[in-house]
Amino acid sequence: MLGFVLFSVIGTAAAQEPLSFDIPSQPLAKALYAFSAATGIEVMVDARLAAGHRAPEVKGSLPSREALSVLLAGSNLVAREFGPGTVTLAAMSPAAAPTLENQRYFADVQRAVENALCADARTLPGRYRLALKLWVGPSGEVTWAKRLDTTGDRTLDDALDAMIPKISVGKSPPSHFAQPIALIVAPSDTGTITGCSANMLAPRRAANR
Image 1 (tube, one colour):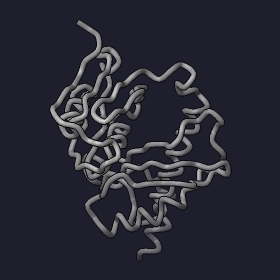
Image 2 (cartoon, one colour):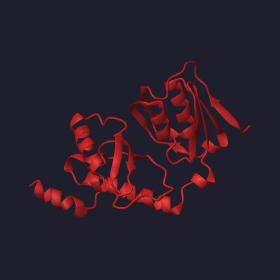
Image 3 (spheres, rainbow, N blue to C red):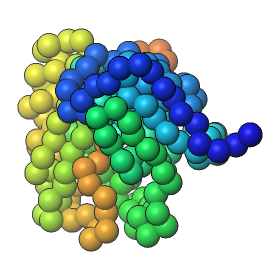
């Protein structure tokens, strides 16, 4: 029978307290159960809304609220209530649902992040996972950003932290564009460089000779 499903685990955890997560990418319903098991937070969601969605990987130390935000990325589900031990998920209202203008701007943000990663040989994408939240100001510049987990390489983490604040989208976000923006850069299956055009790589290769 379809309806609300409650993923219930004994215990509670504060939404702001960093916890260690190791939830692999999987169907959203299973990922929410794993989230509940890791945090002790009861998750209430209509099974019909969770069906057909796949949650991205969440790995590293971060607050429960942010971990849940990553899990819900792309599902059109949002947390309506977040109490000490319970969270209720609901579908995003039509007024807040992504519009074509929002989708185009999100693509612009993705492109800006990709360009920034490809501009430094140390941060070339494809070999590591990056979970990132950022806020774009009226000028199109990133005014706030936070790396949500570690890549496992301190030198790479430092390079990313230096690069992230320099990201520029080049134009202001739409007035109804929801922020902060959550992005995940996933490693390729082969661990090779992905997403960087030949034109972007050529100058670096020449400089490294």
